[in-house]
Structures are given as structure tokens and as C-alpha cells.
Length: 250
Image 1 (tube, rainbow, N blue to C red):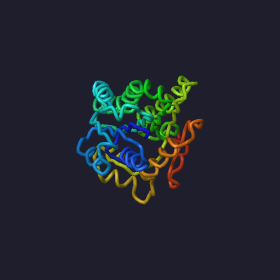
Image 2 (image 1 turned 135 degrees about the vertical axis):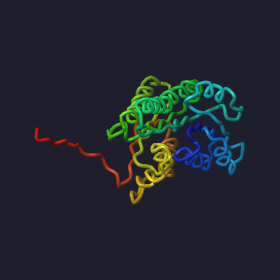
Image 3 (image 1 turned 60 degrees about the vertical axis):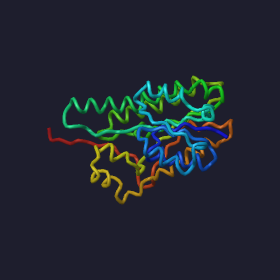
Image 4 (image 1 turned 90 degrees about the vertical axis):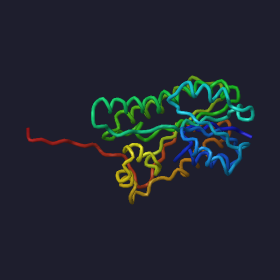
């Protein structure tokens, strides 16, 4: 039985991925910040199938402790899914906005590379895989996305360079780059403003978390000699933004 370590498991894509992999017969390590949600997520499967880890990926000490304290049945990890991430809208003051930028960098970049480094030895030993959740924001700019898009561009490039560094070791690395997915993402981005979050998804026919979870399971299930380098997924209703031109009489 294979084992997968999934971060950001308490909602959205992460939660859907836990369900998808557990249903498919994998052992799952579900990591996230909210213990109650993790327990509810694991309850239908039992402790032999889903092991929960309460941790914040911004806390390097918590990452070390989580990896070192894994019970023996969950230590042979075959796949890491770096899903934890967030975007935050511009705050009211420059100082607060800078704090938001640092939170995005610490979550989307520092946490991802820290956990990856911790698990690389076992993933290399088991010729496993790494799937990093990037975003279409890595490739297509949008107003207000300078730091979030920058962090996701890092995730995409890190994934490709990591694959190059692991050449010949049999470790697969994939960057999944979703577009609009209806999760708590927009609620977090809009600082818990439910009206703004709902407005983004209203009548948009966005992707569902299960859509991305299915893609993750598909990538993981490819034959051992097949590596999916990058996979960009958008709802039919969403397309790339056009160029804008500011006009003036001057």
C-alpha cells in the first residue's frame, strides 16, 4: 500500500485529495492547522488509513517534529502533495500589506521547500513523487497578484529545477496549476468577506476541489516511467486575461 503526505488538508483541494487517495486504497498523512477538521476528515477511514498531523507549514520546527514523529506504518512515504497555500488581498496600510506579502511567501514558498527537503531522503529511497500545487497565476498576471503570482511562479520553477536535480533518481515531480476552483481560497484572500468571495464564484461554473483531486490521483497513477511535468487546469468559463491599454490625451 502506498503512502501520501498531503498539506493543507483541512479544506478545499487538500480535503478532497485526502478523500480521493484514501478511497483509492492509499494510506494518507493529512496535515493542516485545524485539528477538529482533520479529525472529522479522518473519522470515516480510521487511524490505519488516515493519520492526521496538526501543523502550520510556516513553522519549520513543527514540520521537523511532524516528520520525525510519524508512526512506523506511515513513515514510508511514496508521494508528497504540497497543497498548503494562500493569497491575501491588499491591506489598508503599507505595513499590513507587507505582513501579508511575507505570510504568502512563508506559506507558499518557505513551507513548501522546507517540507520537501525533509522528505526528499525517503522519497528518493522509494523512488516516489512530488506534486506541487502551483496556479495559473504563475503564468498569467492579474491586478493585485504580484506577490501571490510571484510565489506560484517560484513553485512552478522550483518543481522543474527539482526534477532536473533529481535526474536519474527515479523521483517524479509535477506542478499542478489550477485556475478558478471554488474553495475557501477566495474567503481567505478577501479577509473573510463572504460577499466578495461569493461574488467571485457566482454564475462562474468554477472547478470543484474534486476535479483537482481527480487530476492528482491520475498523475500519481501513471506508469513508473511516465512523468507529468506541468498540468494547467481551468474551467471552461475562465480564459487568459487580455492586455490592457491606459489611454490619455497627453
